[in-house]
Image (cartoon, rainbow, N blue to C red):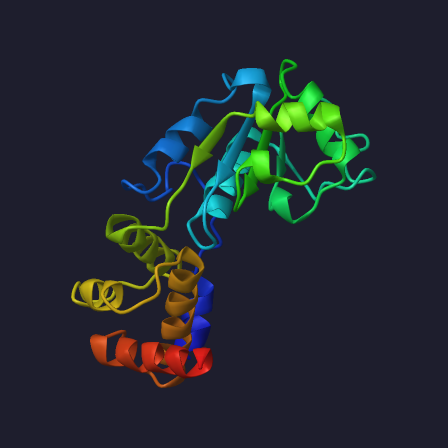
Amino acid sequence: MARQLRLKLQSERLASLDDFARGASNVRAAMAVESWPDWIGGCLAIVGPQGAGKSHLAHAWAAATGAYVADGSPDDISGIGNRPVLIEDVDRGVAQETLFHLINVAGRPGGGLLLTARSRPAAWISDLPDLRSRLNALPVVEIEAPDDVVLEGVLRKFFRDRNIRPPEGVYPYLLTRMNRSIPEAQEIVRRLDEAGDDGFRPITRVLARQILEENQQLDL
């Protein structure tokens, strides 16, 4: 019964720039993203480590602007028209001709191109001289590993999305023991929700300790 009630109440919320948790580690990146459509050349690259929140920020922008989330393949962008485009993990491989085309058209009215990666564009592989010069000139903003302010903000959001209100003491307990990663925060909240429902248990520091210990065992 507890799980059935929780699933009925749980809201499936889209990413939102208003809900994006901000702190010293990401506020410059958030402000840069929000400055669209005034990006130089219509382009912006967000770079930072895994789990820092690049995807959360990028998809919040995509939701706010109606951007097309592309995979970077030539077939994927055919017929998208003049609209903003998001491509993630560009440093892991994107069709170079596609990227070159999108950069060239990004500055048109109604357009825009947001890219995410772990490394700066100057380090991305390119065999096309014209693309190389454009990558070297791309505006870049860095996002750092999330600090406590950001992690607490995303924990609260993930709990709120599941209609859970844990005791305030749960937050500092998690922050001092969890990995510094937004996906990790989301996974912890998911597992706390499931564990609480399975055993009809409240979300407390005791349950949080159990979940964190299980996570550590899984990482071994």
